[in-house]
Length: 150
Image 1 (cartoon, rainbow, N blue to C red):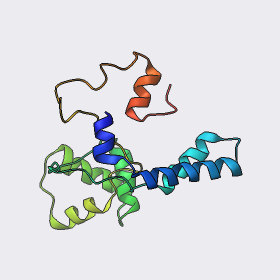
Image 2: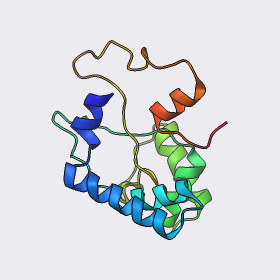
Image 3: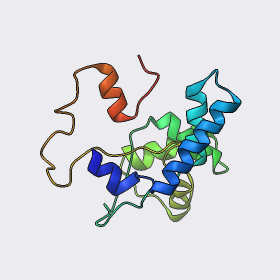
Image 4: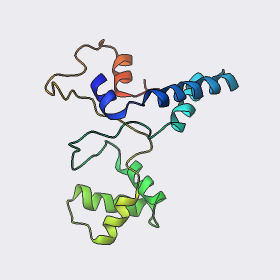
């Protein structure tokens, strides 16, 4: 997992220091909610990580519900959430080839609201990156970047 962070999403040392300084400033202003302070600092430092190294996969994706994605798509175009859901089901689930207008609409929506990362080892792709983790829900949630779930 450490290799992925360094190779794909790690902030440069100056950017990481800036993130920590921003977090400290947030805490100085509002020490009552440290998670909110951390979230706000992180959001101001999004998209500053290293680009994904070559070879980049031809298709990148993420897991999400049709409803969530339809909502993001509707926010970016003139269709309703229901129309967007139908379009997604038509193209993604039924395998229908989209017409050029539909392709333009589908490409407008953000992939997700927050960044995610993949967990694997380029040096040992068959070895589970979770093998050495403690077998607790908290450790697994932390490794996957999930929080506030119970």
